[in-house]
Length: 341
Image (spheres, rainbow, N blue to C red):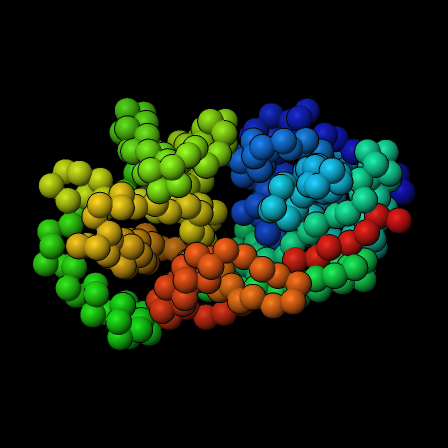
């Protein structure tokens, strides 16, 4: 291998992002702001890097080091590292060879850092020549190194359908609740990169406040919140909300990449939940906005089930049941756990 390794910390934002667009794979987890979001999670060492051969970038690797139960692990706490993405100009055989070599590089870093486990995930939404599509190609490539793996379905809406088709796929209960809420006088709001700094700061502060009140604590470090806000400023996220009588009721932060949108973080002010059931109206308003603005796919979020090697708080299952009723299709997200030998 005649590779040159360049650390993420030695890049400028624009130069790193320029490389992302030359890769095939889950580009949306590799932008500068997305990595900064991972990096600012508690107790993370960011070891991400680019791999070059001569002047050509062959691959990008997003790698975080965590310490869980006194064990050093490649992960971003509970978030698994995204699978490395590789240059779209490579042949199929060249991609396979490169992925094998990347594994060797990662194992060498692990030995140097005394890391014993590598938690890695794949995603069905990929970008090839910057065009978004859903693909299962090579999604289980990493199984060759896995000690264990588990699969979640993620719910994705095809926004290429007619609005009436999307609506008809909603559950009866969701349609009933949305119709009932329409008479309540709720207003849908969009805060994106075109908004003023004051508008972004004000709305984001209320979003952060709603999170705090829901959990009775600050759910993430200030630096992590700041990275989320920067994603809005840089056009990599949109903060949607609904208000009633000029008071914020509910928020949904979505990440965006090209023509793909994914749900990121949501919060309501609890005093309005019973009367307005705001998430129903908010999701429907977001779907219509995305379709109108040319987005092709909207990932509402995971559909969790409990099984032998996966468990989660009961809230996860009830939320995913709610998301399923918006009628999206299921696509697998694979999580691999491998041992560094």
